[in-house]
View 1 (cartoon, helix red, strand yellow):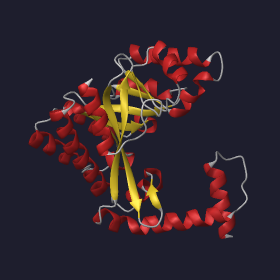
View 2 (tube, rainbow, N blue to C red):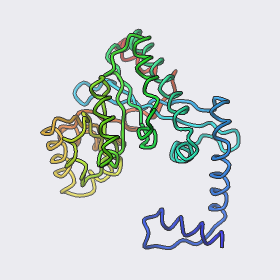
View 3 (tube, rainbow, N blue to C red):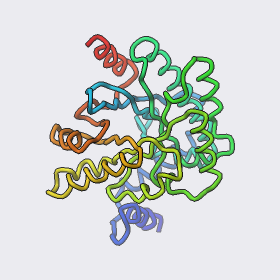
Length: 290
């Protein structure tokens, strides 16, 4: 019955209206998830986490103007673990605050060094989970304390929230977003789908950037209408006062189509893979020297 239950949840995660047979990999994944949940507190104490930086390039100049901060867990048994596999546990076990504090501290201190030495206008984007933003004490006092200590302007940091967060009707969360925006932080709505119902709500919350999801970028070359739809989405976002960043760009054809459609910025393997601190710094050095 446990095996049946595992197969059922895989079917649900695949979009429902389908079925899956149980196999051993499901049992191994269930064991891994259980072990991750119990190992998370110790992992935070032992500093098993590290950051990668995904460069974001301006379509107008081709230069790196921003980077998305990507959190990873270097687990001693399972190797490198992505946030989707542990952030739900962090929220469930009330560990999202200490984990988020660590990400903010490491990111902002590194950003201060890069802005001083290599890229004065560089900005970082940090993904914030709905669970973290929903906390009364979301840990963002750490952010403003570091801004003061390092003499950084608040708009050097962009908090990226999900499309679902943009659609929230929680007045407390909306009020928190507005107050953080008034304090100088900037916001991006991430991984927006091609239908983009979130645009209907964009005037209600203080977002300045819209990110087209990877799946939307992948569909650009699939048919004759995809480019026209993308151009219309970008034009509408601009009319609403939003900048547009496309993620998942893996080919020159995608880049050229998005550039011609008026997209502002892009990220993906065609530009750069996610880089560790040293590799990203080297990219900034080459750019500063060029």
